Image 1 (cartoon, one colour):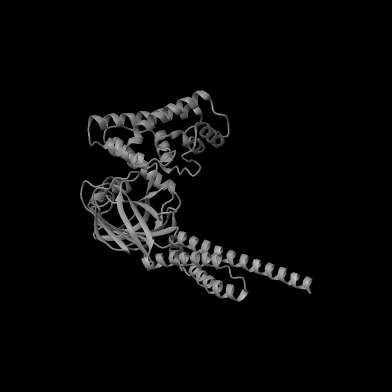
Image 2 (cartoon, rainbow, N blue to C red):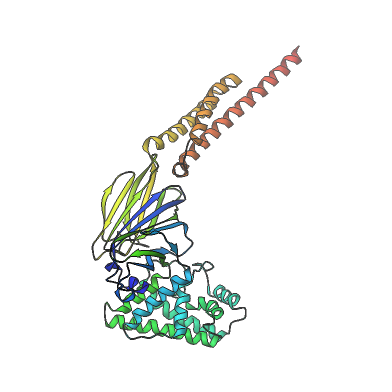
Length: 447
């Protein structure tokens, strides 16, 4: 049933409404509502005629690989639960095999096990800076013995061939992945009993390579074939996975599925720009809302771009835009599947000007002290005390981490100016004390 849902997403996914709320300087809350049409027509072969509901695993959203934070899901009959990664990988592998069967390419049980391991590979230990030697060391640690050189050479050839086919279908390269380098899952399939030795591993990787190359040839000869969808899906599984949840749903009426999770947010140091990737073509229509609820923060710039490129995304229209929120609407057939929201955040104008103005006044006050050079404590206290108090209030007044992050440079300028004023006052006071001490000594000697 899940394979049916994966194969025909636009037949049941009517509308997706996604909301991105920037709550802090380090994270944003993402909520997604999926409107589903009645499922009986699509799942007729799998359900009884008199059944009114079904318990099934639904793919509700494409997700980047990695842990889920603050995740929750709500279906029409109450809360749902997330499927384990191995169960998700099993269904993704079955979906890929269904595409291959459409062009009469069968997969062996061993190749099925390899596809499950590839789809379920998380890659927490693999990075984009991993070289060949480190990769071999990773495999040796996984299998617990030294790898034969001829097997390693054969695995490299398989990886090079798979990478040449799959890399053009990848949105953005984000590091080593099992679809491009299937040798990464050899420790896992050895432990699972899919293979028993390195010779079987070499043969199985060769079978995987042959499957990909045959699908690629079929795609080039028959444009728009299932081979194209197979290669696109397999390449996308390098960075993302289909989030699947178990839900009890009605068969004869539409319903909503709501999910919520928290994603990391990284703002640049100087410009305070960030980005968020999302899918806008997994339903008949997609609606996106980007919000900043902090009343002291505004959206200074916003655009929808192609992932990994400065080019503007196709098919995502701005329906509404102001300083606190932006709404996008995507409904065209020929629209980008995945886009990247690029935004720049800034404090309100009055909040941005005040710290810089205060910094300028503190620097001018420091310069005036150095020019006039008063040394008595009362004068220095009257000048430095109120200025230091006002600057301190500016430094600690931010109530949110986001506002504090956006005013980081201005706060640093205030801090530097306050430090200069304090050091100048202390220096002048010490000079005055030394002069007074010297004058007393001279007076004492004369007396």
